[in-house]
Amino acid sequence: MLTTLSGRFLILTVIFVMLAEVLIFVPSIARFRLDYLTDRMERAQIASLALLGASEMISPDVEAELLDNAGVLNVVLRRDSMRQLVLSSDLPGPVSRTVDLRDPPAWVLIRDAVSRYFMPGGDVIRVIAEPARGGGMQIEAALDTTDLRAAMIDYGINILMLSLAISIITAVFLFLAVRRLMVLPIRGLVGQMKRYAEAPEDARRVIEPRSGIRELHEAETTLRDLETQLTGSLRQKERLAQLGGAVAKISHDLRNILTTATLLADRMERVDDPTVKRVGPKIVASLTRAVNLTEGTLAFGRAEEAPPALTRIDAQTFLEEVCEAEALAAGEIDIRFDAPPGMWFRADPEQMYRVVGNLIRNARQAIAATGQPGVIEVKAAEDPTAWHIRVCDTGPGLPPRAQENLFQAFQGNVRKGGTGLGLVIAQELVRGHGGELALERTDEAGTVFCIRLPRELDGA
Image (cartoon, rainbow, N blue to C red; front, side, top):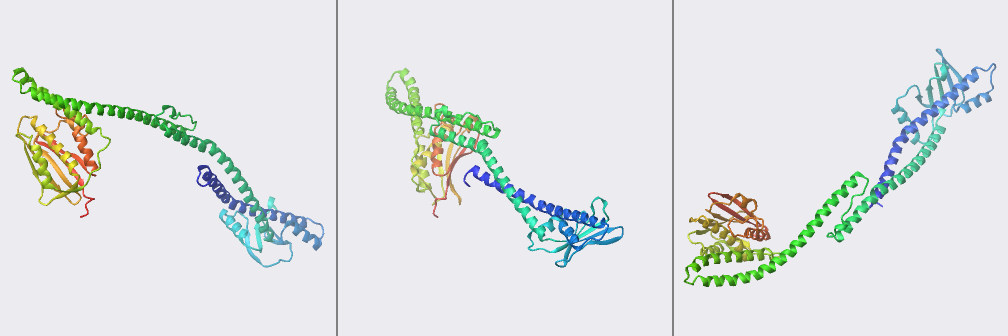
């Protein structure tokens, strides 16, 4: 029961109702004691007035009967300035204390009631009160509290039993109400979520808000919007996956066709016809761009890159190898590298070669587009937390549109004929190492990309 919402609500309801009844019980006991003593004083006054109104002396038996009916041991009536012992009997013990019923504070009544309720046995007290209906200035009576305590205990038991019955009935009705208004709708909402999870692509399983409770209706509405959005996203991803598979197959076959066409175009350049010599290079350039597009599409369309095989790489040797390979096609562009002697870093050599090579090629193409010579410098550095490889160039900088879509596929290309996939693939490879690829600076003086590789895997 404690694991269900309705069960917990039932238990909490019983506890809070009983707590409320306890808070009511203490003042009720105090009120019962006050009424009990007030009733005894009124009976004592009636008995004393009956004795005073008698025309002759009454016998001790009648006097004892009057005291017994009044529930007191003696009665003292004060009229004017005279105190008169009207009725008396032998006291079973000394008077332990005096209780004044003339406008007592509430806290005093509660304190005395609790003290009497939990104090075992009985004692003799003197009670002072104002006579009813102007029957004198003051009336005093002594009484034994044994019967008072017994009456208070009986009253308390009745109150507790009534409180228990009220709390149980209230809890049952609240339990049924909460179960009907809250628990069952929540269970229905959970059940609908489970049904939707079984086939999220099925739009017929999207929840339709029907609850009349505002909060639950808002929850159903929010869930409906979420499920509708998720169903649409799943359908779109399924279409994109199918389209991607088709594009990958087409790109693979198209790449083979274009490669053959490129070889044939290369042979066309050997023909002496002036028209062929003029058109041939353009055809070769167009075919090269088409091949690059298909290769980039195939690379980006892979489900995932292989996990990096991390190994220690000497920074100087690695950068020298990459820069020398890229310098073969650099022309008038000077490609340099700089790494501290003895520096090494941990990475997958093949994947990191692709990342750094891609950044150098992008920089080389950006400088070549200006028709001016330039410099590309690859710098390696390290600090206590990471290794850094920066690719700096003196090119014209990236245009605003390219900066906004820098790492978005097919959108971040800068040069004509580019696919915009190089940086996306490079970023994925760096993330596979637990690092990050970021654009540090780009302006008219050049561009700087930084590869950051964390050192937490380093045992040194």
